[in-house]
Length: 199
Image 1 (cartoon, rainbow, N blue to C red):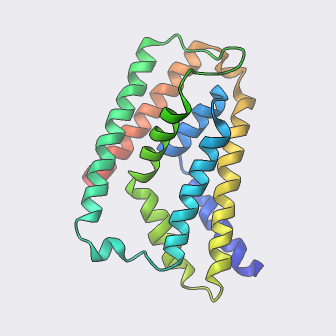
Image 2 (cartoon, rainbow, N blue to C red):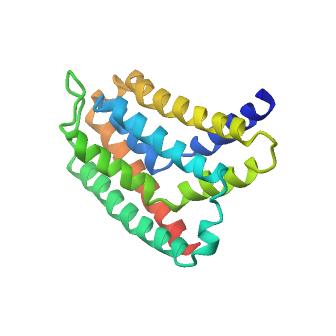
């Protein structure tokens, strides 16, 4: 079982480690210590559902529905452009610091809706989880163990990122650091959007 579980874990972790919209949002929430558990759980469960779909053999969906891929691609790009603009605006305004409790005042509902959009409107999420992990799992006799390893990696990474972010809290007590983070996130969002449009 471990001969299949570990490759699933390692591949999933390597895909998640790339800096993207979802990870940037989790990092920000972790720094604010705002709804960290629910944010991490939402990311991990979303990944688990997509990985399960891929391992179960639904990776052919995009091939069978020709309108699915461009819809996800352009819809995701539009959202990322808007979200990046919001980060640039926050960087321009400045003045953000962590208070004693680290909260940013964002409601749980708003945080989760933003996170769900960043997750489910991103075509790369489907390519990495449903298509890539799903197709590679077919090479193993025990696809269930491969999928379990991939799901475990997702839970491990997101909770480590969300709760580990507080170690950076002293650095983010300075407004300039928040401005730099907002610029980096904004550039990341726009870079991903441009890649989606031009691919």
